[in-house]
Length: 183
Image 1 (cartoon, rainbow, N blue to C red):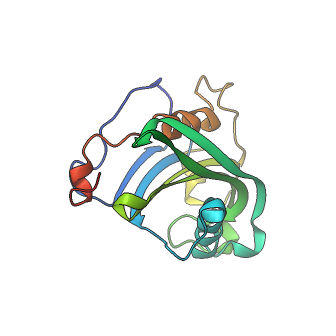
Image 2: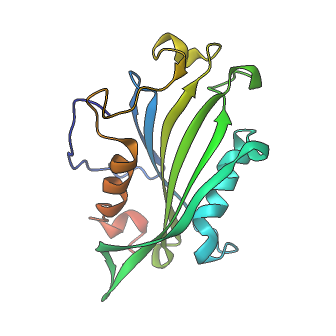
């Protein structure tokens, strides 16, 4: 996410689903998703549940290595007087791009936060993908050299861990009417 430091961006434009920001030069992405609340998932373990769900969707459930799981308080997003809390999880996994097979898997670090907007029956899932190792057979290898990824700082970019932290800590709902008038 080179070139841009920290710019606030309005998301969704009234169409609720997903916003994706990609830096093809670094093969990094930052994704915001609004999903129906997974009521059967416990609040404290929701981020880890979503991390495992993504790993399984990517056919990477057997190689997921969880590095961290916890919660953070979001002072800027409030429900009444109480600040919102986000579950967080970080893991490494081997994933393929698009329809490529296992032989083209890249090793990535996946940062995930789940903000539970229960009053709006919505799970906000924020994910950030940081490549660690690009497979020479991956379609990413043509834009980003195969092999170990160049550290962001060395490339003159903000580290994905910082981009993720800024995205989560600054997430806010400006129009609760997006959620059918919930408040």
